[in-house]
Length: 586
Image: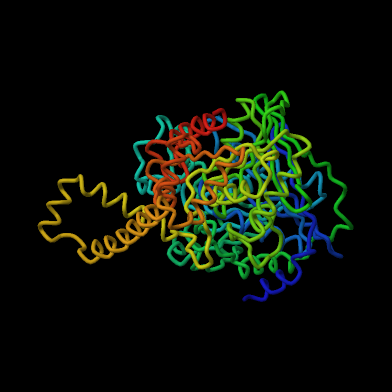
């Protein structure tokens, strides 16, 4: 553990005051977090943390939160925010999206100067947001500083990276015409027409007070070339960081580079060129976002859970409230921003939703709790029940819903809350119905078996794979191992069903829970991607009980065709939203 991490973890409980708001941008429609120091010395330098683009925005959310808290701990006012059309900020459909983001950053910087009184701005960017930062810095009238973490040498290099990621998907045919869809994010093709404006070598950075470049060894030579071409090679501080990819891993596996964050902070504390501020002035923060299609309000639920309430533009609250629990370790916007899009779609159909973060995840989390970033925390069910109670006076009932681990939370909370408070539970692509310590967050073993079962079922119908089998071009040991494991599970479930029918056995845990739902007044619905193992998990583990409940419509099933686990393409999302609305209205 680095010295920076040790100090941060010891003090993180009191280091800063943070406030979420819609506080800048065009017509106050950008969502952000302002961190104001709670310390004796308040630096006159403020930081603007510019999020990376695409899936990296979701994956680095935790790292950005930690960095913001560290900055505030050391006396630096700090702002992290969502760009137009990203996360909790207002929708934006313009084809000039990258230029719009440049304007967003400029407006945030001006807001921080005007409202927080900072004298010097440091722009921090990672990946393509580092290129955005370089463009913004060039346009600043006042001297500023920049921190660029693994920038792209050219705009086209960024486009090639998106294209390479897109090619990895098994669902490329789902790409919507006129869009580039990559790793769960869609960009209008027209947005890439003039990417040369984001080439680093074309920047004029004479007004830069300090430049920090964080790089991997493989890009060192290229970075030397563009630093020389813009004339800042001698003043740039270069930090070698070999494990950049670890910060961009899946949300539940990301690591935080506390040592690099500490080094950046030390460099700006040493400067001391500007006098410290006496205090950060009182700042007006807007808790609501108004749109012609929806209204959103920031809510601090029960003092420790952050969430966003989305309502129809007319404020109608006559229908039950839909509560969306975290999908894995992704923060409340959801993988591919699926929760934000779903909430705003439902608002157009008269439904209110509340998307939130559990206390150890996303924007509810502060500091470094022991169970940070763990989506199956023991406290989760109780926290969801607390949210239900919080809204009980505003809505006649609630509907619990969630994707992946959010389905697990919804399923178990629905069993432990009176049916007067919860009228329906909608489970989307659950991967387990019972969490056991030691299960993998990557691929729980039941999911792997179901995926393999689907694979081999398809293989039996594929003539080319039979030919490969006859020619000896297959993994015989793998097939044998799978066959034994899967056959054992099938036989065990069948024997239990036979004993259950003969009253020689009791229902297993999942069967008992499903029967409990049947006896209650809480409707239970499932939404499955047709390529996901959730349906097989349900029918294999609950056997004849599931079959009976499905047959008499006590359990309602909905399938989304040709969709992956998180609905990462626009067409998939559209089909999913329609199925979700159908599940609500049934």
